[in-house]
Length: 272
Image (cartoon, rainbow, N blue to C red; front, side, top):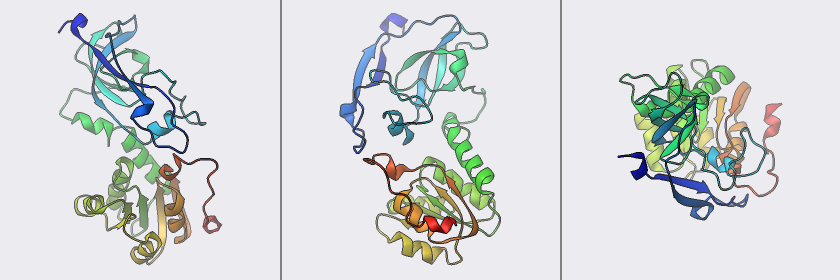
């Protein structure tokens, strides 16, 4: 198919959600644009995979954050894997597989310096670079091992345990010889983390009383908390932390749509 016959399908940010509202279709605009031309130092990349992550809700807002917010009218940001179709950049050739953040669109003219990685041409599944071999895997690996330093026999609690990061954290903790308790929503997710991933126990926060279930499954207290949710789940874990427990505060999903200031943990005194 020639360039003239191709269409670049895009989702653009049309409006910012109210802070207390979930993102919805009304906040995006569908556009069919021309495939972009490339300049020196750029490559035309066709998207193969796009990652959808909770942090994109933050990018849609104007709150203070670790990256610039997505501007209204711009293509929605997202982690991507794609294939180079044309190149005017040294070191990149058509057919090369690359990873970056060019967002929710079929094609992008990307500066070579803006690509996170040129992926090896081997038998590794491409999706692995969106998970265990990508930013998600690095978050789980360094967040657990560097921040928490789990030791054999310790009890590790993971919230959002069936999510991208949490599911990897639990598996690494098991490799390190820990007892792992995951908190997830729904019987399907809870069954997956115990039956397939090897977690020692799962708590369904939608159907169970989390503080009581944690007390049951963590009879000797909690040594490590890998926190992705915050709110009441963090309080339930704090109530049971042992002396010298370590807490990796990775995310606070429960607060992403909060309106106004969010109260601190009720069990914060346990940190002392």
